[in-house]
Amino acid sequence: MFKIMQNGVNRLDIELSGKLDSEEMKVALDELVGKSKNIENGRMLYKIIDFHLPSLGAIGIEFSRLPSMFGLMRKFDRAAVLTDKTWLKKASELEGALYPGLEIKAFGMDQKAEAEAWLSS
Image (tube, rainbow, N blue to C red):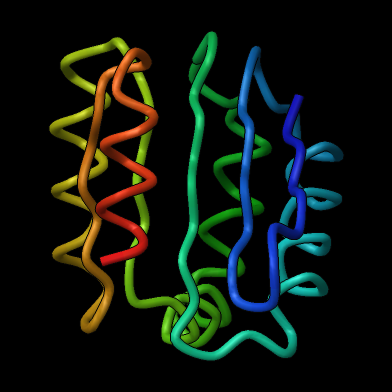
């Protein structure tokens, strides 16, 4: 499951759980692009509840859209990731290095208040 919710003018809250297949990845990326359309200097709160690696087809869809994802990520300045998996925390912060101008910081699931404060600062 991949849910994207608008939270104010320049913020998206994203929730990921389970495993994404290629069709779900297409829908999720289309929705992400659509909901990000008018965002500038945006913020994201990304909650990873129960992560499973996406299917190979879903990864292929994501890679095929990588150029447009770079453009999309320029709309955002900060992203907070909530997860209890240590390796996902490290991977998400490493991903921040791939997107110039986007700072990604990971927090534990019990640190939502800290993540919210960081996003607002």
